[in-house]
Length: 305
Image 1 (cartoon, rainbow, N blue to C red):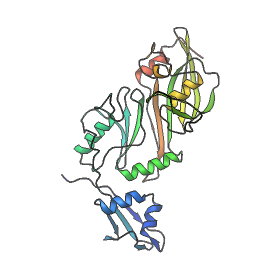
Image 2: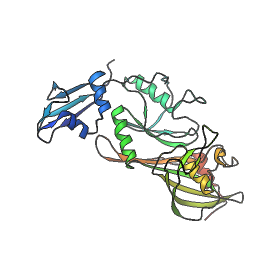
Image 3: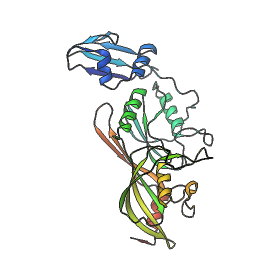
Image 4: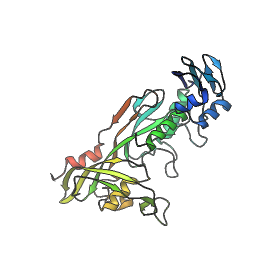
């Protein structure tokens, strides 16, 4: 069966522009152009193969045939259940349950989202490796975004760096948070002596999290707060570290001081992601409701405030 090659077509709307400059203006990186040239791709102008030095004129049709990508050598394609929220030729949005890794690790080498996406690509003859745009910790549930081509990954990564990529999480934390809405801007770095744990430290990387209280409640006479969190940066364990620094660790997050009395994993869920589609330029938003284990924490609460 033939591979489904990834191809993009553009109509030139200006006179006398080099093909190289035209493609750069459409977000095609130098690295991608090198791959097109040397790894089996093609650049066509009005159906004729051209080099990047070709001079374009208004009305020309530019077609880019992207080369097939080699699957990652260490990623074993596997079959299994994938809860696909949205899919087209460029992107894949998946709902990940708590307990499943996004990518293989020492503790979970198989059965991750990446393994299953690799298996899906193999079965459907998609000539791409797995490109993870947004990644969730194993015990965090919710939405994950994948790109189906290195060029799409590049465009979405650029959008994320420009903060045009929106991510909203819902968490349940210990104690009552007094303010209804505020922003945490505290740098995050690796904790001394640990390869996993992060902490707020002044020599760390800039990190910003917006916090909005959704509700305050009690369980067994103890106070808790449900919060909505918006990420402006994507540091490792950012929400978990910022809430620990605030003095309100996530329920179930024993790595950062949370109790396991109510739930056996950090009560954190990626509830929404939004971005501009890299090809159609259409604004897209995807949402995911709370999983049962988090929903019952507030539903069975003694009281709400």
